[in-house]
Image 1 (spheres, rainbow, N blue to C red):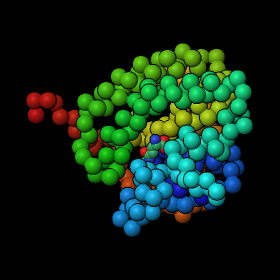
Image 2 (image 1 turned 30 degrees about the vertical axis):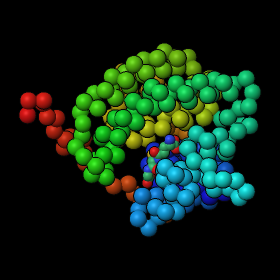
Image 3 (image 1 turned 30 degrees about the horizontal axis):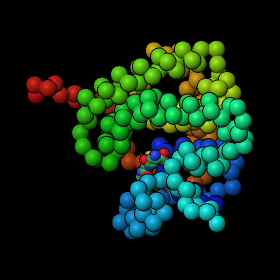
Image 4 (image 1 turned 180 degrees about the vertical axis):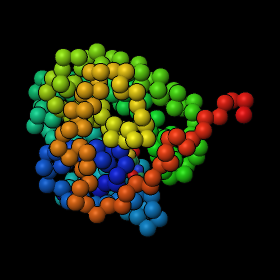
Length: 221
Ligand SMILES: N[C@@H](CCC(=O)N[C@@H](CS)C(=O)NCC(=O)O)C(=O)O
């Protein structure tokens, strides 16, 4: 199996899970939007996005959740029993709330700045933060007295935490939510979480400017 990844969040999630499981994947560094690779990646995934898993005898599998399901199904991270609806519940809820909020903040402060896509839209950041606070309050209450979302670690934790490794740019107000912060610490301590790319020859992400260098413009400016 070949896992096509970059250092961006969803490929990183798939690679972290693959590493955590010790899955037998060969890792391929991908630049799906680079002109010399675009046609190849469009053929593998019409949206041209990664991660993508190539497996002999099967069509290319894209979407991090689907890939992680393929790699983890039947084990504790993706149990095929009465726990599965709960895993799906947290993936689904997270994608609509906490993950979406952290993705929006990361888009403005991380991706857009790294790739020179445009200035920070502070209204977007504020929207992301408001959504973050709503979701974080619910997660914090749920995580009080629990180590992970289902009690024991599952893929739902990995998905919920997709954007946490990028907190150098997002600077999420996690300290407002002690149980959530403790959970984030447990995720950070998992094997391979801090650096799933160790040992791979893969260029670093372009550096986003330090957050202190951004200037918030008031609407009057
Ligand atoms: N819904 C998709 C999103 C995939 C996605 O947005 N991938 C981005 C990175 S986060 C991508 O391919 N960017 C191009 C790159 O990393 O070079 C998933 O969960 O896998």
